[in-house]
Amino acid sequence: MDNELYSYSPIVQRPKLTWPNGARVAFYVGVNVEHYEVDKPATSIFAGTAHLKPDPLNFGWRDYGPRVGIWRVADALDKYGMRASVLLNSDVVHHYPEIITAGKQRDWAWVAHGKNNSIFQAGMPIEEERRYLADVVKTITDATERPVHGWMGPGLSETFDTPRLLRELGLSYVLDWVADDQPFALRVPGMLSVPYAIELNDISMFVGKSLSGEGFYRMIVDQFDQLYEDSKDSGRVMALALHPFVIGQPFRHKYLEKALAYVAAHEGVWLTTSDEIAAHYAASSAG
Image (cartoon, rainbow, N blue to C red; front, side, top):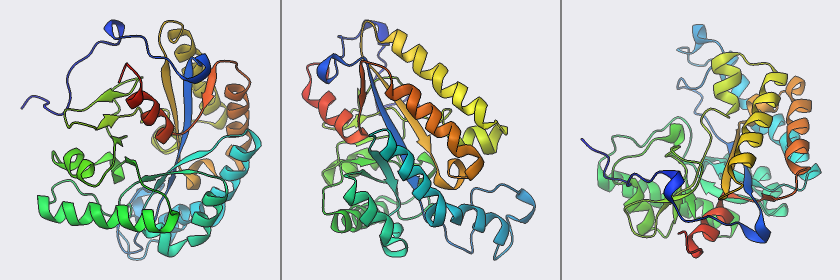
């Protein structure tokens, strides 16, 4: 079937996109704060034990994120004046409430990211999905004391009904469709796609391709430099996707700090959140 969720739009034929204060690149850090069920296989560093119940090797590796890694990432963002766009499993509210408290103190943006990363909604019947989405959004809204505007499905999973159901709940954008360097409108009125990073993503690079920390830093710099050059005529979005159990490992930390310092040192960069990108684009003539 053809894609009926959004229309084709070549980036070279769009109206000029402008960011606040004449910025060329809108930069945000998407920090995945997730909960995994202990008796289900999930993202693994060693496939040989992934089927075990429990799986101390892989579950413990993932559990490093909320216990240690998130705090290291938070310190790095604080150092360079950046606020996280937290891609939040609603189960985090119950299991790791200290993270919610820390994020509220830092004015992080909260993007709904499903109930946990052991459940994908792809294939859900529509009424089951409607209840599922409503519960996730309400749980996060109640805990963070602010409305939820954005969504990213666990594993970037959706059904064909997801954007419409999210709009019914008052959300205005999704991060799942990694098809562009600018936001774009979906065919559901009032819903946008905001760029996310599936390649400039620590899981893809470190776990999928065994990249070094220095290599990841180089990728971030190269991505930024090209988008900065592209943006001389129209604004771009750069998303950096992080998982605290991956980038939060001690031997990678200095490369994250080095990359953030590089981006922050440039003029014409809007250090922002995915919420603010979506709101600005929706309010602009380009939206």
